Image (tube, rainbow, N blue to C red; front, side):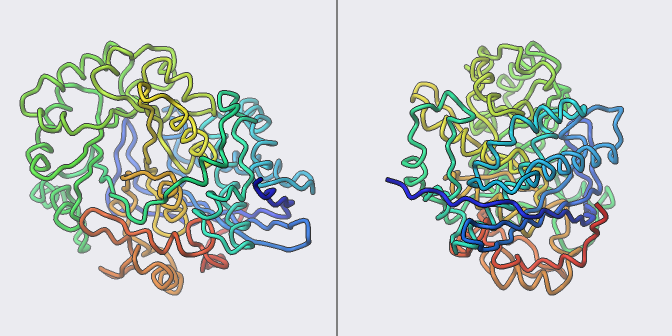
Length: 474
């Protein structure tokens, strides 16, 4: 019989921010991001025996993804996410009751979704607060028990009981499922090609790309990192997309092992998307690229996506739900419309990823359900490490990575903090072009140190973070 998961009270939660400036503009859908804050969470917990533990988490506050309302400014979007964090902190620290790590999440999930709705926050925004707090709490627990994330999850140290919030998993043996996970020691980095990205090096040079010793085009990124997996953004204009994809195909056809396309909600309805899909599959210049395309992500705008049947399109190309996966039950709703895949994204909560992984395992061979790791400009350091630890434990063979391309590594961090990350994770990071940054060789990321070091994402005691180097005015 499994050992009962430890229970604890949440004693304190604090928030900190760092400003992140992008070296290259990142355009996805109708949004172009050039800078945004990164939030850090510091949590303190108390076990039943009185032991005190501390943990952390970090995540970018990307504008125009959680809420794409064009009437909202970037600052409006940042404040929405801050409000979600405030609401989550108020809930998690509202009493000194002892719960398991999962128990804290489960107790507050529905009330926080309801509170967010009353405050005018959509479910993706409302999920942001608990997503960060849950990671910081499990990090503290891992450090108290000297466990890596993979070991903690496989032993179900957090006491995850999915059926409490996902009735479709009633009878599913999550403990047995968790115990049989085989975490990846290395994973392919699926390189994002944004809509504003230069494809050839000549295009980057002509466009005034920064001369900082780092790749500024797809061609240069392939040369430097050895990428063989790619994620290509779509703008929703079929003629423009086919033209751009054809340019990309000329470059990557000889080397690409796998490609995914991201619709980023650019299609108004099923008919508009099916028109693109028909043209994409019929284009001779894209035959190789289409054959290597594993799935197309979130083609329909979220307002109507879960009301439109895409079974016809899904029979020709697997589809993955991302932005519309806003609640725990969303993947079930999407399956009924033809979707077979769902994204694992740290900003949506690692418990949701675990629940959806269980659903994929429970599904029949005919259903062919799958999970894919997608990025939201994750930055080197705590946030990146926690996301990589999660997708490693999930057993994924590739994960979208783009934060290292659009941002100059850890250049904004104090030098000692950079050195600490490099010292603890020399397989994951390297020092080049004046800063510590992600190490990608042969298109692969080495994750051995994340598996060996204690904490959620190998954070270690205190994570080596210079908390006093960040603003904490909230």
